[in-house]
Image (cartoon, rainbow, N blue to C red; front, side, top):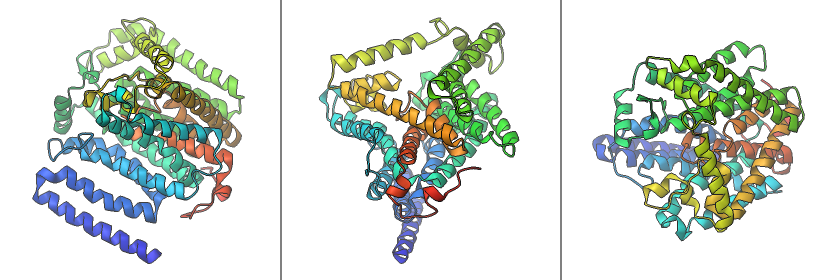
Length: 482
């Protein structure tokens, strides 16, 4: 078997080299050739070292946005427009197949059953005619079902050691991502980013005449969410004196970058996540821990209200971004300064749709695929109402079970263990909460599902129930402290 794996790896490298040469000879085929060149390497890693492939996928998704901009206008398109977008689905399908073969579906808990229902609904609703056509449904599968597969990957392949390495990789990658975004804010956009802005015309990037940063990602929302994940991870690293100085510097850098990105939602969720993580570290009970999160949010809003007048008078490159951020936080219910009312209205509409259209509007209706292929776009920007819009009442119920069971389970694991992995996973889930079904955030969308799979594996004791063909030690024998 090892000989076969080495042979497969060698073949993959040779094929990739040949295709790279073809891309150099025919620039118009660059994107397609690059996709085909990556796939043999992906297949070899899936067979030889699936855990390494998980880490490689995290790195790929962070740089993919920049690579797409560098190759903008070269090559043909696919269902999603860019062939490079198909790398993640290919990787996730392979990893999910390996995970299922290694016991991901065994001994299903309530959480696992609810995720399985969501996966089934995503498949069935892909052919729902209400969404506007089969292309919309297929696109919806790539945005919704592919990230969901991360749960089964996490449940089978993510032991404590793998999850620890994954979190550290994400935390480290968040630092240069923030630096890139700050450079865009203070220095300006390089030529490839400028072409991307002009070609796509993202209205959401413009805040008071200033273009907000998006780092190496495909959108500013994805950039902000990834920075939020980084903040949660570095806060968890700050629990030990040895890592405290570096962690504080990283949190300050990431916090500055996400604040200047000027999206209020991520700032709010990051502060709530820190409050909940702190509660877990001192082993506060579950319900009071939620109050800790709300208390942290209250302090944020209080600080914003005191800074409001000064921010309104801010000038310079970042003045509009700061004013937009602080104004919305200081007056969240003022429609002139905040979009909270719009989001609440959309959420209520989506929740009503779960009852008025109990069969749902289709998997693609809440994704970018609906607008791209002329479908009926029903996205509400938050998970519960998106689940109701896409999957009807069964989807709403399944999502609520996942959210409540998953978050409660993550908190109990974090409070019981109080180690880096458990606390960081809790923070990751909290800072991405209500965006778990947002597949348009490519680098982030799969992470909460991977984390939920790890939580379910940990609580169910699957490290011993479903042994893995190992690349390292078993879950039960791994020290998870830093």
